[in-house]
Length: 229
Image 1 (cartoon, one colour):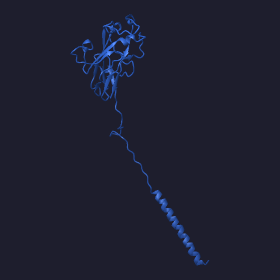
Image 2 (spheres, rainbow, N blue to C red):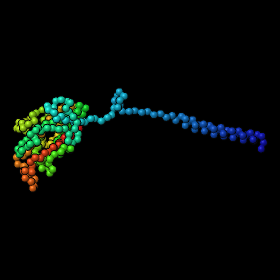
Image 3 (cartoon, helix red, strand yellow):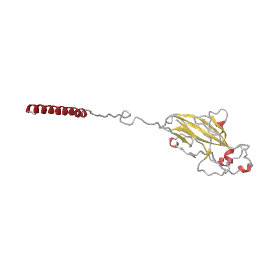
Image 4 (spheres, rainbow, N blue to C red):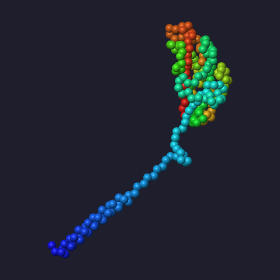
């Protein structure tokens, strides 16, 4: 091979390497130019705080007449709940007697609006009674009257001309409210309830019992108000 041919061959190899280097250079440059970036947003309230959340729904009860003191409103979500007192005569009923007790309900000051509906009575949890066969519980009758304005919780609440609405009337163990009552948001309204418990003139005697079997018994009914927002 002569010197001229050797030089020509060497130049072609150099050019080929240069071209290859240029191609590699283009690849490296393209990779480095693929910039990356991220942007984030969040749901806020316009002042930097959280802007998404859940509402609050809470119903409170007051068993202390005249039901006007905010401090007397409490949450009692579990059986037996708050205590309504039918009076000292309630423990010594005779056929034909009736006794009365009241409670008031409202939403809490942080709550949205909703409604409540009275359920049929069940035995109060954790309260010892003397009624092993449930004779007295099954014999008692209940009436409940309600209004969004305060009213006297006595026999007049169930008399003709009363402003209160009768929502329950029947056997204690199976009678709930016939309708729901609305409660405004943020303690904007109060619903008043009057419970009447009575022992009928003629007792519904269970099979195999006599009226003597109903003497000296005690009962502690508990009612649930089911609340819905």
